[in-house]
Length: 229
Image (cartoon, rainbow, N blue to C red):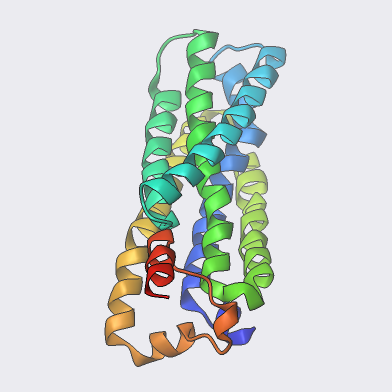
């Protein structure tokens, strides 16, 4: 358990990334209605329905992210997460800078944000399970989830301390958070490949004591193994 989860540097990278994913998600959920009401002139009751659309589009985002991971990126979830976080940057910029007052447009922007933020949320757990093997998969998922829900300290208490005039800081902070996440996901695969080739310690940390507990790194690798057998 110590080797595959707590001593695995890739799990820690995913934990930090998950912290920022949940920061964006809960920032929108907790403070979205307030932002829409006080800065965009949307009624509170209407803003509540708009947040429901944000959640609903997130379900579709998870499904599409999973399909793209398997069909396009060969099971490499970090690459899908990178694309989805870049899309989330675009949606956040639109929410921040759109000058109009159209409820339909703002609902569409929130749907885009939900679509792109919930995909990485689902894929982080899957990627953690692949890294930790079947023997420690549940512990790895729980560990990344711990960091995710710890983000409510920042998204809830931290943002709650800001005044109404600080709403632009909320969106600016969300953009910084998403950018950091994009950097984490962009570096994950290349850094793993480099360290596997040049670091004996990294190969030792990733070694599986039980061959039956090993999960494939990607669907391409799984297909290759089946052909060789």
